Image (cartoon, rainbow, N blue to C red; front, side, top):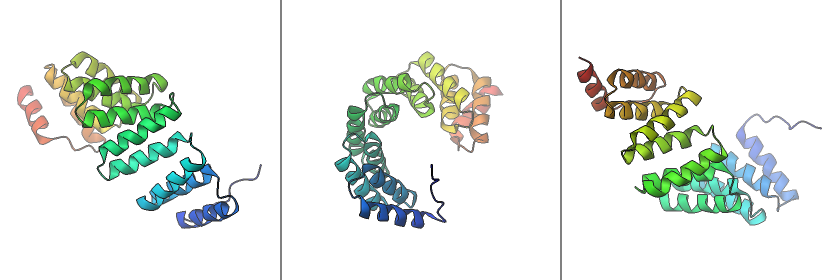
Length: 210
């Protein structure tokens, strides 16, 4: 097998992919790779055009729908993000990523009831999907389901000890349960990972531990 040539920068790689497309314009994978390369440069319009070409040539390419959903999220278009991830899930029902994204967006839209089953699917298909576990914990927290929130957030930080948002949310749950010493440890872990813990939470924990 010949090795992929090394490129000095993303622009060289983009040029290489464009040359490949001149030889084979119907290769969905090449359009997809070109879209990812444009995304790395934050050239969202070019990236979106490539992902649309990718699914036009390879309609079952769920990853391209997920990427288009990500571009929608970048623009603040939650409904668009939801729609593209639903398309991705239709094409590949056992692909965890779109289910995690669907759950995340539904929670942002305030629909925790529908978010929870989507997130549970994501975790069923990928039990180590840290973001989905953390989002599921947040969804349960928003519903006052503290035990379920605790279980999922603890799993998230066990899998990814440097995932600051999950530590922060775990601290919120522990504070709600009156476990102030544990909450203090969780905010320390959140801060150690570079997460900016809200001052109001830090103050509340400090006051309770006096």
